Length: 124
Length: 131
Image (cartoon, rainbow over all chains, first blue to last red):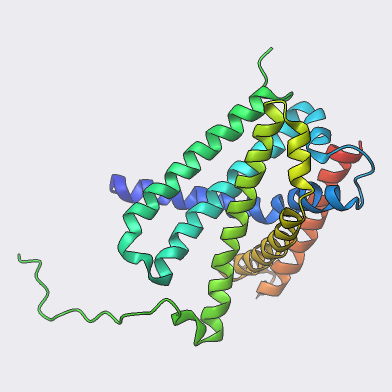
């Protein structure tokens, strides 16, 4: 298989994995931090969900990293492709470059910020 | 051998609203636009994590309570669930499973995966929030 085709296959494979993550893990995160906490709905009794999740160190940090990084990859990858379908096809290369830049910076930022908070990526 | 094509290639020009004239295309485009909400929610949450990490927990929590952000999150949840359900249906269409002499139907994959989604969501709440 040519190198470019192999890279393309890998990128689409990661995209597909991100789709699974966005489907199975993202809804509960959106509900907990974005709806249940500010509106005081079940299961949030007191405190904020991000701190509760991070209090479970390894598994909580891993959950946040996988969910946010996977969803970001899937969302940006698909969105830049969508833009080419509504009249921005001439800017395809530029959109891809911006998209990958946001993905790389975003994933590094998630890893960095989680490393500063208690959890699996924390330094001793 | 020349790579020149023996006849001119005809490419139909599509305007930005090509997907509005057919319900299948409209459904497809709504599916594609779910990615906007997935991406923007992820970026907002990364910003909130940055506030947590830099000691600005109060600012992060105030951002979560912003009515505009709450409204966006409700929309993001609806679009993410739309992504999830159509994704599950697609799995059943692309990879049907042989069950005896018959093949599984897409709606069966949809139901099984919705059950998985509920179990996983409840497990996350039980293990990471309630415990």
